[in-house]
Length: 366
Image (cartoon, rainbow, N blue to C red):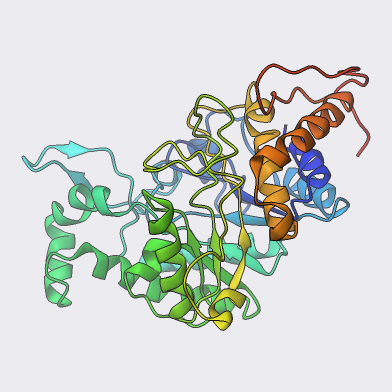
């Protein structure tokens, strides 16, 4: 599945594969330093990525002009980590004191950072790209159960002057994690989800990955803020392809945007009010496909050619990419090309047909 999608990415001029490899539900990366992480945290022993698998993906991508940037999202989204590393996660409690499922790293323990240093020492060697994504999103709600309702952690927060502000504890975590990354590989450039920088963690060279915003204006305001603060930025807010809307949702800006983000083609990551210097800090955009309702059975048709619209928007002259009405015939024609290469990609706009679909099968040489 990954190799097929990398082949499609190359056809559509996507040059970075952001691999959100681990999350709360599963830890499939087969670490040689901490083998229990995958042995106990993956769905099954078959659902893992060995280092040989990772190398195969990286080599396959490289031959197609694609870099592989891995993400190990912390301190949240880590429920599966704790299965193979006892003591790593915070003990979590409801407001009544009943235990609940842990899903946040315990940032108060020195042992946490010893573990992270050893893990990232391995990860940064296995993934050679100069960029590493460190996550940092969606800590807020979980922090109530796992930090504020944990008496030991709450005492740590009070002792360190954080009060009840969990963002300050998350800041503390990243202020300890980022130097670990720099000590392992000073050339590595860390990427974090926007909350980390919204919470005023100031660290030179950290790249903001902007993903939030209920409206298009909200998204552009965030891009303006992070670039004004001196950070390079990547925008994904309007390109969440796992959200599906009826019709050609790749085309038009939808006001109010809310959760149905149907605006792939008209979204411009440099469309905010700001100086030319700020806009030079925009590294690009990224189409997102999270896997809550996606697996190998529906990944390709859900991504393509909706992602093709994103690729054209990001790579083409803005003067030539202003109208979905002009773009959809191109997407239809390119959809037929992808189908002739054996990929089951969905129609971009209303019922259409391809003269010669599925001329080849799914198998191809690496």
